[in-house]
Image (tube, rainbow, N blue to C red; front, side, top):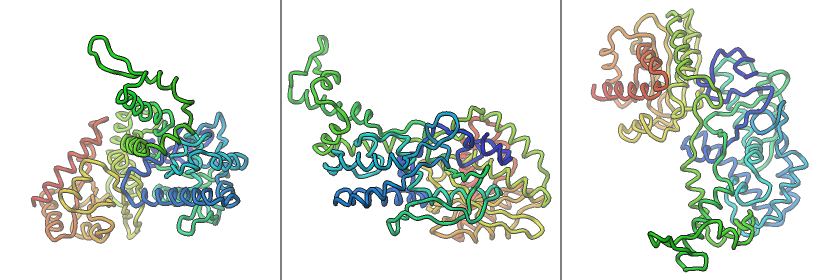
Length: 478
């Protein structure tokens, strides 16, 4: 059973920022370090710093003959199944590295040609250059190393969706990059059926990880050797009959070279480090997040129709404010992914009417959320969204509430979501005044705009981008 079903969230995978895991078995998904490194956000930087801190420390202990310390570091890469991701068969077992395999990891690293050659730089290099490492093992290692961040993320999502957590539960070991030690603490946790659960952002998982030894060998090492053989006119060079073009087959190179295993690739990398750097850069650039529905087969057009009906059924006013806010969290997740991720509840106040403030992390590579900082000079590492279920018009106090969240470090872009605006031109003029005064860019979004997007079905995210561009230009031009 999926978490969304177990917790009665009444949301599809499209509406959730985390992977809607099955708590009874594992999904064949893996944490992808390339997706972590690729996107420029405070959250991604923290993840990158933590995994680099661990791996650098581990390499230093191995390089300096500190075997007992290296064994200790590996010992906390223990079996874990709290994410329910990986390749376990049937009931989730959490293959992980395991206490026995941890010794094998140490022994594999200690005897690795890559360690001796000094060619390992990042933890993902293990899959390419060290025997015994695959995508499942690497993902499990990252889960242990990044556990503190995943714990914090899980609590954020529980707060966002009003999911009950349990106090004072052991966290399990996680890597503290500030003091370079494994730590354990008592903390709030999501517990389901007496088992701790870690939620994982869907933006950092993948079904099949790029960066394998096969890809490196087949598309970079052999390509280079082909060029070198042609350049040096070796005995492997042939000539095409019609075009007279010289060529060398990869098959001939493989037959001539020593066994092209990971030790071979390590020695090759030591001689030609620029090829490995090119490979890693290519893998990083080609990494793309999974679609918003992950492995779910549900149709986006169906989801859009469901959300459309839900929106139209919610009345205005304070009594339905919670329903409206909860629905809009899912709708914005659908419309903004993968450009904005990690929605977090910023503030909740109840003064006769419930008010909620949400911020998303901006990890966009193109489109509106790169246009704003690059062309409009409005910083937006975070994007703030205020949801109002008013039966009346929003006015200046609502604008002031958003402005109060802005700062240069956090960002100065906000979306004010409300049911309707009687005179939108007047409200746009108020937003324009805010912009001209240097207080930030606020874009009003009404039910009419949301309905316009949802009716586009599969093109709903594209339609929302167009609306954001249209309204931002109206505000900027005043």
